[in-house]
Image 1 (tube, rainbow, N blue to C red):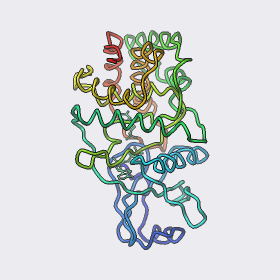
Image 2: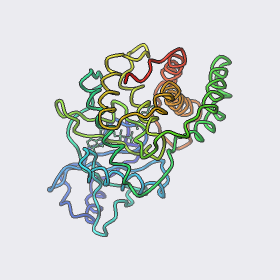
Image 3: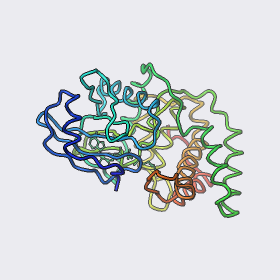
Image 4: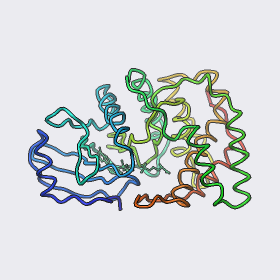
Length: 313
Ligand SMILES: Nc1ncnc2c1ncn2[C@@H]1O[C@H](COP(=O)(O)OP(=O)(O)O)[C@@H](O)[C@H]1O
Ligand SMILES: N[C@@H](CCOP(=O)(O)O)C(=O)O
């Protein structure tokens, strides 16, 4: 359940007085999600999502909110944040930083086919292209430096064979040359549960709170590792080809990206093995995070090390 902080309807009604979106009709906690408290809010003027930020430092939040506004302005189905009467996106509610965004339509598809993967590939490329003109900059919070630091934190909790896997992968990633890859704004967590489908169309891309500046190919690898992986952790050839071809049609891959693809799939797998292992072994006191199984991404990493098809283009 992802309502870590309760909000009383009377408190919200008063808070909505800072906005121009009418009066509260309904407030409903949202059970999905792992890191923030989320609520569906219906007012006399529309449907919104209220997020109370439980962990991200307040100073980092404007980057995410302005990014969502930027992408929405570029025509992508990203929830536009709602400005209050002082023209601010970020407020305070129940002693937490809080923001309202537009509620988008659709629901997640947890068993995607080729068609879904094709649309997601095209959407990701559109997001990367629109992100090029975003003026703010914040590094990927789960980038290379974070991965090294997180590995040191979780290593003591791992059995010997996993420590060996981790050490070898860190050495491999440290030797990789990602210097010439195109960089820009990445979503960095474009998993199946962060895309809402409205029939065959993407009605919404949500959860930008891991976004940042990094190699665009890292984002592609994160997305492929989730959308195109079968239950046994292998890449499904058709879904992978569908996603990558659709992406490539909008933003063609460079030679450097082609050369680094297998290594980047490993970096992306490592990132989620580490974050899940850290949430599992080192839960932060007072922070309620729903833990997803670390073993899933440990095994995906092992499989990507064993072999990866090249970019099929
Ligand atoms: N703008 C939105 N429009 C519609 N539904 C949303 C929106 N934002 C979040 N949701 C719903 O809330 C759930 C949790 O949101 P998410 O951003 O994944 O939470 P968390 O940040 O805690 O991981 C999503 O699975 C989705 O059902
Ligand atoms: N996608 C990550 C966890 C982040 O969860 P989200 O609900 O915020 O997308 C994982 O699978 O480990």
